[in-house]
Length: 257
Length: 270
Image (cartoon, rainbow over all chains, first blue to last red; front, side):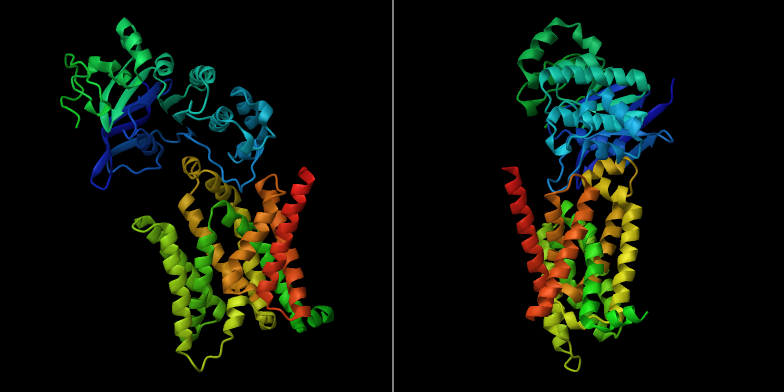
């Protein structure tokens, strides 16, 4: 058993009386790719902010390996229009040398943008820039908040391929939030479905063997959350669809409000 | 020495030297005001400078010191109050800015034996620059510029993306406090030249002008210093020859430069 890069024990984050993240346990080691899915407002971003140390846990324990270098790819890079910034300058602000920065940009396929203004980049180029910036730090753990947002479909597939390759090259752990379930399935080792608490978690291979799954998947995104019903035995009225009740495999035994 | 003495003996040149010292720090700090959208915040601190003056008279401490301390306290209060989130930050700033200004004015009116030139405090005064003020300005400028250089990468990074900066181990909160401290110092030293009501203009206008021509953050700060120097020297010369109030003259000059640069840049694009 390799040492966990990050481990959460019964972590709860509450804003006021309302728990946004409720008693979550998880652990990520080198070479793992963990994807967090879940509906809007499920606390996905809050959960990774807790992992990153930006958000404090109300209760529970967040343990991080000592000397852990985290590469963080935030959801957006929204720059003040009044702040002039070139890709080169933004990369150098990571504190790494130009050679490292060039290599990282080349790895994510945006080396040609070195002297461009960050303001003029497209959504996809910005995501690749943010990824390059995380890479330049040679991270042990890569944390990505919806990395494929604003990227076209072809771009999404290659972005997830890239993340998988980087996991091999850097031998790092990866935690990401995603909405693109069909791509997540291909790129992920483990999936956690979050709705404040962990509704279910599992390995994509278990599910993808099921032919019914593929069919369900293409048609209704909302229903795709039901994909992991092998761990479910409850309903999700919130999304307007009722998950067929399957035999209990652990998970939670209750109805969602 | 005799040249320096004759320069320092002339009140106009003292004002000019002081103004240039202020422009030197107003440039880079003005860029942060623009980048971080702190214009209203700067106004609030500047208005509380008047409260600082009143308090300095009340407990008889040097004016500059009183102003710095008051501004720092108000800045800390703002940071703490903004965390409670019961009021929108612009409401909070509005309350504090005008209350501080009003309390300052009311307090001053209770001290009839203290003779202060209110117009000078509000709009700047060419004649008021003493040698001691010059020491404050250049001492403050050296301190602020040194601190800025030391903290530059962290400050810039937390301005670009606060959360990314936090993850990379940059002490975002402490840097925010350092920036507040620097603002307070700059406001205390700039007050004499442009006056309480117009300090924010001296911070913002040169920085905004510089944005038009700048390609990276450092370039923008250097240009902002340059435009600030132009505005101060042009404004004070104007004030000297036309007998106009110092602060407004500097701001008018800064505004004209702004118009010229933006107009010129538009022309060159066509």
